[in-house]
Amino acid sequence: MTSQKSLSINTTRPRKAKKIIEKLSILVDSGISITLRKIMDRLKVDEKTAIKILRNEFIRADSKAELS
Amino acid sequence: MIGLKELLMMIIRAINYSTIKYWLLIGNIAGFFYYPELITRDIDIAVLFDTSKDIETFIHSLENVGFTINHEQRYSLMSRLRTIITVEDSPYYIDLLPVVHDREIFMDVWIHRTEEDIDGYKLPLPTFEYWIILKLYAGREEDFVVTKKAIQHAKNVGIKINMEKLQKLAEKYGIQDRLAKILRL
Image (cartoon, rainbow over all chains, first blue to last red; front, side, top):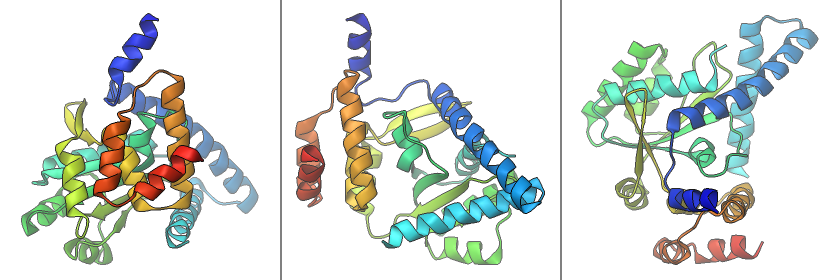
């Protein structure tokens, strides 16, 4: 009950921004690192190239979504 | 690799060092504060360049914190166009969205923003209701599902949503049908 009450106080106000951003970053970065390793292995490229390939794909996919 | 947090801090620093007054972190990173199942690959920033000085100081700040701004990006920013900003060592990117036509809704969100402090820098975010309205306003089909899930998550964990305010905002911006759609999805 107490935790529900404190959550409802949160209502629409985000808190502890740094911790929240850190949590998100850990989640996303760990997944991306695996993908990067796969790209490096399969395409036999270095990390910089793998990062570029992945980022370009993200940008391409996002711009496609915006158009659809 | 430059991770998501590091890239976010770079852009927050750049904006804070510039003369930009009106900006907001929007999109899925802002949404993560309310719905922690959201995953993203980009950092969406809405910015109102009030004067050309805002753009000039921003470009200067971007370069100072480590971004390389090429001629095309510089032109895009000066023209107040959507600009993708990247750094070589990061798979993520910044989707910088200058406010031109949607000034009214942007200012509405900005006035009602919530401001966080992150390592001494200001981080302005939309409130949950305004985050929902921005998603609906954007009108992307996939955003409707995400928004619906975020509302459901909030209800499940006991976070109150001001539905009356949501309805009023939806009416104000002519997106009642979109709000109705996600509420019955």
